[in-house]
Structures are given as C-alpha cells and as structure tokens.
Length: 374
Image (cartoon, rainbow, N blue to C red):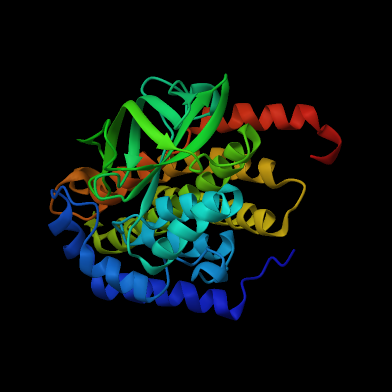
C-alpha cells in the first residue's frame, strides 16, 4: 500500500479546489442556502465536465475507473467549500451498481451517471433507528412481476431531483438493495429542514412501490455493510474539509482579534486550543486517507480502518466545531459570519452514516472476531 498521494491525485485535489473556489464561493453557498433545489445546474454541469460523476465508475461505462482515494479527495474539497450537490451520494450508488448490479442494470444506469445526465442517492436510514443494518425496517416482498417495497426512509441526501433511489429493505428477514425510479408510483419525497443549510435532505415514503425484476442488486448484508463503510469514509472526507476550513478561520480570527492591547492568538490558552484543533484535523486526515487506501488495496483491516476513521472523525468534528465557536465568541454563529455554515455542516457530518457510538460498537465487534490481526 502506498501512503503517499500520487502526482495525479494531487492534481485532482488542486483542480477540485480551484473549480469550487471560482464557481461556488461562499457567496454562492449563501445564495443557495434557502432554496429547495438539490444542486446548482451550472455547477453540476461544470463538475460533470471535469468527470466527477464518473470518477469511480468503470471505464467501460464512461467512467474514469478511479478508486475510493480519488473520491475521498474530491469529497474533502467539497466539504471545505461547503459544496452543494450529489457527488458523494451518486458515487456511492455508482460503486454499488458496479459491484453488484446486473449487466443490464449497469448498462442502463452507469453511462448516464458517468455523463452527469442524472444522479442517484441511497435511501438507507430510517426514523428513530440506528444507521446500521439493525436499523433497517422497510420491507420488500416478491411477486410475479418483481418486488414490492414499503417503508419510510429519512435523511436521504439530494433526493428531490434524483433520477434513481437505491433503497435498502428487508427481504425474507435479510437486508437487500433495490434500484427504484424516483418518479415511480408510490414514491413520495418530502424535503426535510435540517441544521445543515448547505445540503438538502429528504424523507421518502414507499407505499407499495413495484420494482421490476433485474433491479435487485446481488449480494446481501456483507455487500451492504461494505457500502456503508465506503460511504462513511466519504463522509469523513467531507468532515475533514469542513474541519480544515474551521481551523483556518479560527487562526485568522485569533490573529486579528485584539484584547488588552494584543491579538488573542498570542495568549497561551488560545494557542493551546488552536493546537488541539490542528491535532484533530491531522488525525482525521490520517485516519480517512488510510481507510480509503486500505479499501483500494483490499487490505485485511479495511472494515476496521473505516470504523476507526468514522468514529474518530465523528467525535473530532464536534470538538473542532466547539473550539472554533469558543474562540470566535458569539460572532461565530451570526448569519453574517461564514463560520456558522461550517459548524452546521460539521454537526450533520458527525451523525451522517452513523454517529461515533455506532462505529465504535461495530469496531469492538470486529476486534473481538479477529484480535490477532488487529
């Protein structure tokens, strides 16, 4: 496993930052904060031109054939810029289809995803349930025409304009995944108001939704859990970008804010607080990059690495946000200051795809199963 980013990967990260800085600056983020649209069509068109939607898809379907590391780098820059849009959800569903979709389903959907002709999202979480396989309550029953889905999903990112929904439901007592057209009869999508103003989340109700044969993905709980791990790594990357920007804003503020005739950044207690934030940022970066590299290399500790990164990041994100707000004071959560948008996104990232407790519990289970290789 190579622990250094390649020149091409560094170029991808730089190009992603440049695009978001030029075409989706903080003023753009604020302008879209109260809109119901999932994405700015112009920014989505530009990212599609850079190949973002197909970055992790096989080349035979028009993708770039890259791995989780490359997706992680783009997700990191998206989080840093408070980027809006379905990059991460589409990447997750695309990887699921590439790994477990039927040949016909892959041929139908993946070229459209790679071209940015539509996006997809994963409907997994359910109300009042943990973000884990144990929390799946929606049901799927087979009939002669395919399967029929019933249930309620929550916190489904960018579902308002999605073309496809990857729905996880219980079939014969075991979790399974189905690709559903968002406009299918029986699918009801409702926008949810959340703390995070930079992304859109939705509730989805499935009432007798018919899914034709061939749209059930192969693989069972193990494949779905692998997808959860990869989604968690991308969430870590998004949080990492937000944490980096919060640290930068805080350091800039402590240099400019003067009390008792000197910048507050010269006080030892403030220096310690900024140093603690920096340690959490560096730790999150190391854990996230390692988890992505382990997944691409097929390492034996891939699942443990994803859980460790997810649990560390979920806790660290909240701590960095709290320190940033403490050092900014009340101004940090006023509408006029940019920090509050990063705080909101960081708080959402701390629970997306499972909070720290969910991942720590699974990590303990994994360590009990194979302590010798931990």
